Image (cartoon, rainbow, N blue to C red; front, side, top):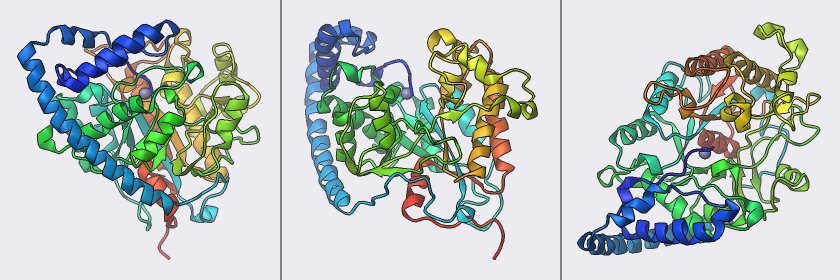
Amino acid sequence: MYGKPYLSKSRRGSFGFLFYNLFYSFVLNRLLDKRNRYKICWRSKLSIRQLTLPTFWAELSNKLISDTFLIFKRRIISMSTKSCINNHTTRLPLQTSPLAVEDTPMFVCLSFDDNYDANGLSWVLQMLELFQNPCGYDVFSSKPLSATFFVQSGPSWEREDMLTLWRNAHEYGHDLGNHTDAHSFWDPFEGDVSQNFWRYQIGLCNDFLTLPLEKGGVNHGTISGFRAPFMRYDDNLLQVLLENGMKYDSSLPAGNTPSHDGTNNYWPYTLDNGSPEHDIAVESGWKTKISKYPGLWEAPTHCLIVPPNQELEKFGINYSLREKIADRVDWFDTETGKGENFDCNLYNSPAEGGSGLTGRDVFAIYAHNLDLRLKGNRAPLILGLHSEHYAYFGYEPFFTTPESSVEDRRIALMRFIKYALSKPEVRFVSLKTLIDWMEEPTPLKIRAV
Ligand SMILES: [Zn+2]
């Protein structure tokens, strides 16, 4: 979800990179940084000074040719996307599965954002290989676990270790989604970011993921999914997602409908009539209005219900987890227990806006929410994660997490996966697979018929 804005050295000296730096880093930063709308890495400016004139002209001519090709390619994608949208699937927000509950797999979708470090990404990929879905007779049973990785491409360009990991992840069957190139910070309440900005950012990340191996890409094929940096989006961004043929987004608020309690959350839906949970956030004053986007799926990353006191003994917790979080997070409501989903917000220091929880606390939250779904409508459990939170940076943890170490977090995530796989109805799939299933659902089959 978050990460340091960063631009790869791979494009130092290119015309697009020069233009990007001059326009966005210099002009917009100068105009807008006082209002804290953009933060783009300063190291990019150093590279502009290092340009020599012959290098500049060589890069300029190369870039003009390749950009002309890319613009042409995107026009074709845009035209084919429009024809797809005319025949799009509509699924309004519903609290029911497309199938009867007993025929519905309990989908668990692990979604990792940012992923700018090889140590954390490598650990996550190797860890997932240790498991497979429970036995059964449906299309997902006994299959390897697949997850979704929303890639911030900037830190991965021209890094052989990252490229190898991404290519392996793709070949293994994981879904690689777009998380922009630079992961820029902005505030929708202070004005729009232009469509051209999003075209450039989303286009760069798509290029990284789809370019053939010999051009330094991952050779992924079509990119289906997107998650907005900092979960911040507006109409300009959503419009560009459609232009780029994205099938689903996973950035909108979810689980904040007052009557939803973890047993009856919305299933994924298309934005034909907008999003009721986004509208609640608009009424509450923390999101800006958006239009309707027929055919664009929303994969909801619901807020998680913190277990009430009477549920904590089985997790070995002898204090009130809701009170612990309420002492640290202003808005947390101990009555509903509705809290954060993303690992950064669960683990990070309260001084950084997190809850500063232990691995045991987080495992209890994950397990409780899976239990609620299994008792209820089996709405998919989509967890927001960051591979960096399972990484050692030069043998040191990077994040300020007062009550958990890297090992604690690794153990908590693995413990949850093992717990989930002990439930015969659970199927770990990527978000792309989940959305495909929504369009063509196939029944869970635990036993041979
Ligand atoms: Zn992010």
